[in-house]
Image (cartoon, rainbow, N blue to C red; front, side, top):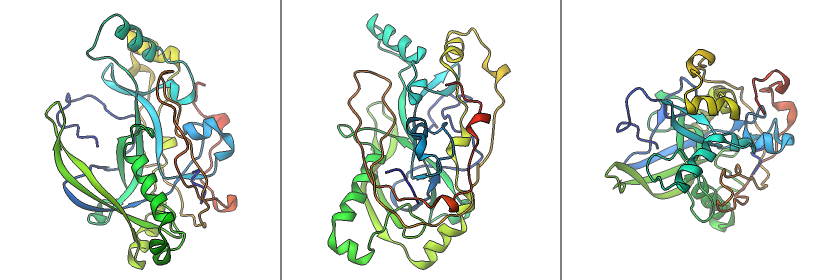
Length: 309
């Protein structure tokens, strides 16, 4: 299986969309205490996936996170930042210009977000859910980088390898449970949230592995759950020159794939490029199992995509 290598919205303005993902799947949030999660392998089916856009040879492979840059609350919605696809972004340019002019509040800089397909073993009835977190880089790690680091430590620990040789947390054939502990904390703005205090990878029992396999047909293909605007379209929406609702048909779909099984092989993956030229460099993070192409059926014809770049 080729992997190529919390948001709490209760306090936000009601009626505003704070995600770029269009899906009917439930949203999962970290909570105080221990949570045992299964991270599902997700196919990369088209160049709407920034990693496929950067390297077309990765189409047909798998990943454990879907990451891109997004602008929140632009005309009441969240949009994919064109920098996710190495394209200039008028909203980023506007944010930089406003900052240079002395503004400090409400600047629409893009944020790097990561999305995961997960199963909560303490809430199996909810099925495959969407977990969304911030994403970072080595100098400022967020959840994806933490998880990658924990997998690397698992790989290097002889005792853990003896208990689960070659296991990779999102591999359908040789998976691990991601055990996360959270404690209550408060942001500098006064918002309460669940802060991760520890992450542990635990061998998966046969019954738990069966739960994973039973839900492989419900994995969320995030490539198929986003609408991408060109820089020109995004500029019109940002400046109020275009009524986005008249031009966009919302898509609500769980975007399903069929189950697949392969043995992992580890290679590095590279996150999307930051939208700012001054942003810290992003380096390869971790592990990626290989895929047998004949087992992969969730393909997409890029020539038929509504893709502006």
